Image 1 (cartoon, rainbow over the protein chains, first blue to last red):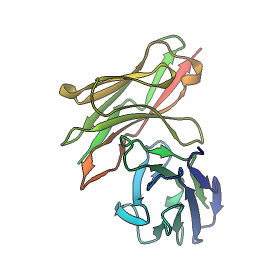
Image 2: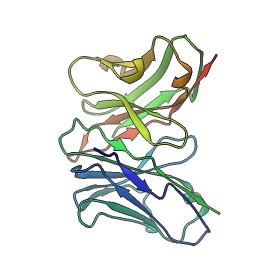
Image 3: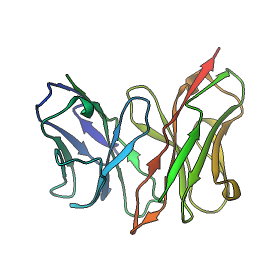
Image 4: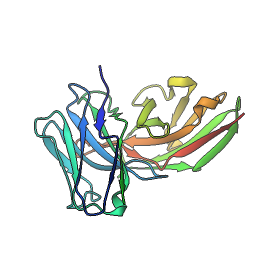
Length: 114
Length: 115
């Protein structure tokens, strides 16, 4: 059973460019979460999916951010017109519906906006 | 609403000494509580969790935590620190909100272990 996989692990982009991160959850995990983590902080919730439905979004998810999970398997997080404040690690996590509510994280995708 | 407070952004101990990392939570309903560990440039790994039942929970690598409802605490301990325990530790709380359980994390405590 492979873990949560994220790609790319590191991305350096110029301000104003668009970036996309991909997350492949653990097989048969129907819930998928995106978090953002900046240096010295804990993970902050961005959004989550149950299957293909995006059920909740935090206020941190500005209109430049969009997340999709079209077939209920992998998910993408796109950031448009990146700003330096978007520099962070973007973490994906997943869990099955009935698991005691433990979420399992991927290794994260580091974004540096220059 | 739910929240987590981790007291102390850094904790420094000597190898072999007791480790105590503090976590207090706020939740309007009985919560699930978690401790995760994060090594540099990696994701978070579950150490242990409390859902229901026994309030003293044992996890991996010799860590344990005790759920104290009256104190709204879930402190993490380990009797004897090892150099490999140096990492960032996060406490998290999860409780039902509109039918969903979305974990909220604390700001983390960096554990430093001296030889």
